[in-house]
Amino acid sequence: MSSNRRSFLRRAAGAGLACSTNLAFGRFLFAETSSPNDPSRVFIDSRRTISPIDPNLFGSFLEHLGRAIYEGIYDPGSKLSDENGFRKDVLDEIKKLGVPIIRYPGGNFVSGYNWLDGVGPKKDRPVVLDKAWNTIEPNQFGTNEFMQWCKLAGTKPLMGLNLGTGTPERAAALVEYCNVEKGTEWSDLRRKHGYAEPYKVKHWCLGNEMDGPWQIGHMTATEYGMKAQDAARQMRYVDPSVELIACGSSGPFMPTYLEWDREVLEQCYDYVDGLSLHRYFGNTDEETGKDSEKFVALNLTMDRQIDETLAVCDLIRGHKRSPKKLWLSFDEWNVWYRARSGDAVNGHREAAPHLLEEPYNLEDALLVGGLVNTLLRNSDRVKIACLAQLVNVIAPITTNANGLFRQTIYYPYAWALQFARGEALNVLVQSPTYEVSKMEPVPYIDATATLDKNGQTSVFVLNRDLSKPRQVEIVWEDNAPSRVINSGVLTGDDLKAINSFDAPQKVKPQSFGKPSTSGGKTTFELPARSYAVVQWAS
Ligand code: AHR
Image (cartoon, rainbow, N blue to C red; front, side, top):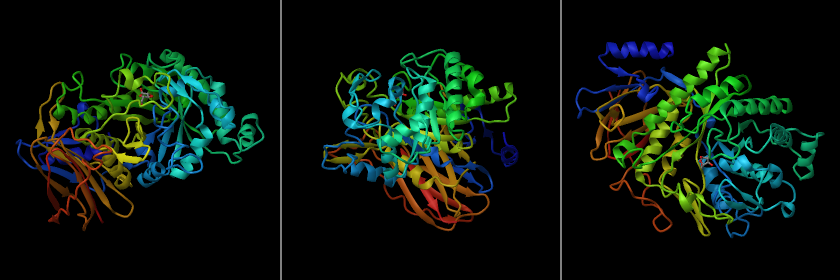
């Protein structure tokens, strides 16, 4: 715990606030109100910062899976595509969103992918069977197309490497193909393919979910840790400036959760910079008993997952007496539970099948808002995170031949990209709580705040009360801001409402007005079932 945080807790205790920093909520600073109908308070002090927010905290993910690439971002036959075959409407949407970094090409797909199949003249590229999703992969979109697309979309690549069927040698060859200017076998191959300039890709994932028995090339933690170490060593010989991410656990549901991370890091701690985490949430019988009140509280379990994973990273740091502190790459996170079995995950050996096409409703968007809050308050150690995924496949954007629409989860993600700038602030939330099964009492109000270099403060607030509006008071402990410059709220009567091509605007942000500030306090009423953002000028 930082001394900043310790002294704050002492002051809060002195002010009569019972602060809870228990493990159930990870590092969420929270105090309970004395009665269930008390207004909630969010204490904000601009001096109490967590960390500068890494620009890559709200990245995303595009896998060769279903219609993410083909019919998603690349559709050469479409009237909506440019001369490269890139969908212009999708490019515009992603450019407008301002997605900073995009993980590619998988996911499970990457563990059987030969990147050489996807480079060189398109007519010579083989059509292959992608075994991960039982899908025909035509290889008409590959590394070079992705790099060109990233440039047009104003984003950066987070490249995934095949450490399933692939070798460390072939992984290092891809770094050479991408990052070395000329005069070596693989850099000259790139130049022969028509791309003179190296791409200087900085971030690389050493495989994907290698702890999972579903993964092609799945192995034990020690075997993977050694393979990752060797890949990292060879990649750094090619380009010492790369930043490398080892595969951590695929989620707390794994029987090897945390043990996997410990064993992997025992092998490769000194060779990597970050560790990956993944998590998908569902309002299912097993996870929530289909209880929406519990579902919208599940981001608190992500706080805990981050906390536990950091504890393992720091344990190994201690074992190794290493000066280096690892950061986390939460490179797959989202809601995903409806399109998760049967035909939704089996391509039946077709090209661009409709896989993982999850329709997102209002309650999913509320949880995604909560997950944004969780990432922000852990931004001192989570440096990369990827909403999985971006187009068509468990995605905020859905396309058809005539256009696209925004799913409900688009909006909290877009707000994070637009408003979460500068530093994350360590706010204290005081809120009434409610009970759900197998969790600590859950605060109705979940809030985070950011402060940018122009002195603009943004507050992100989730109201988990599904039946009642809640009063919220922001207590400005040092400087109260002058005026509201932006605000919006996502809410509605029907938690299960979705957007579609027929009704693309059923769930969309509404105006939240300009809550007024006086005497160092801003008060407003948050509608039931809502996620809101308010931004103030300094
Ligand atoms: O994002 C969909 C899949 O979920 C990815 O391919 C895999 O890494 C995860 O299990």
